[in-house]
Length: 587
Image 1 (cartoon, rainbow, N blue to C red):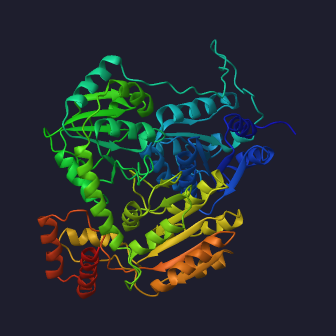
Image 2: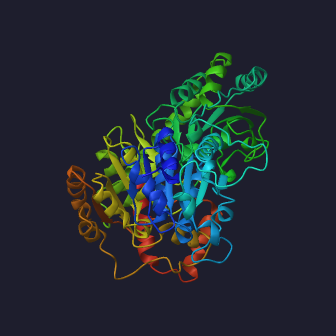
Image 3: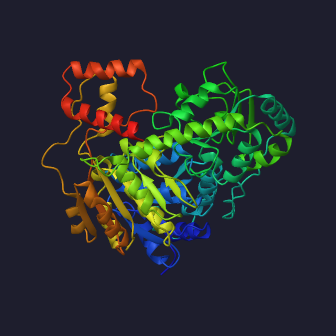
């Protein structure tokens, strides 16, 4: 049997180090599936239940390994389903290759069944986007696509008509009419060593050395440079604030860390932004400008690998274009050691904040407080655990009660902030790191969207632990409606509530339902001790608000207005808020 074009495609992926493709078969990619079958000793195919999950898995694979993630979908609707996960990759700047099928080249443009111009559909999401119309284009276009995804930290897309997939490999069926020879390329990408100019480093150092009170905002772009970030913090006496995506850059028990920033952040971090005279931004494009220093109140030094992003959120006095690690190595010798009084003040504030947060983790509160659930996960997690998280109130509890220590990692949809990636992320992370503990901490809304993928974890024997923070509602939207001054509407699912534990058992895994705080520790221990996929569905207080670190007068006024306009469940919400206040006073 002669080699087919799809075989060249998959073989080239293997030469790039690709060992996993996440996807769902269809008649538009039967040739590519044959290419995978012929190369199954090199590249494994992970069969999912929904293409959206495949794209999330490819994104998570890229996030957790630094290698390109690959997803596969059939023509038409299959390719459309990939879009949400691909936008997650685009907005969080990770390399992903999407491969899709296309109708046979002879019928393109005739409104054939499932004919969707996926190359046009992906114009906004993809950094590289090509239709393969000649077998001779491969493997070169695979090389260009992957190299572009790495270089531009984004999505590449190749779509291949059915007939081209099964055509003889390397065959050029057309007569050459110009002096053209297809290029010969290699599966090689060399990342540039990006370091700012010496003159720019000197200007940055002068500004930082002259400052009285420096604050550091570290994002995911500083990943891998944590020790250097701490050395800079020590030299400058500067507290470190972490973005949510950058939570794992520096351990939470570091003496320099004040926590997160924004609605999910901490009061010390919020106060720091109002106090400093110089902000050092490291590898972050933090979008919530409301929480950054007011214009003119602080000078800004920003380290950013992409020059187009430097200064897009706040006016930057000294932009340093470069990799965070390489930049800090060059900058450190130029910095002068400062007095630690500024840092010590914030260390005291952090101790008070942590006591308040710990007080909300009480096991005595009934219904179960989501803060208590998050603290139990923190206690059971290993020092190298990977936590994946969904969007919504769940992100608040993870941000504040899941502590980064040792080699722990934390992943969520940072900029897109989409629902549903928590479970697919966990599956991909476990595929990529089979020896590590992987926990998916997700809400009931996000889990319900892609819950069939729990069966995927069972089929592949992946021992992920899924913990559902179940408030039977779209909790984040509920509170957002109230903060706008509107009574909640259309956000609680009501009865009958699905039994997620029964669904987990029906999929072949472990499933437990917890409704009382006293039953929680033992149920979690049993799930974590289970050798395969396990799910614990935890009924938490549906009226627990994800309050920001500081509630403004305007927010309080609109919250009250929601009650006056007919907010349902007023007594339950008021009781929960009162309990929170009492617990903080106890702390």
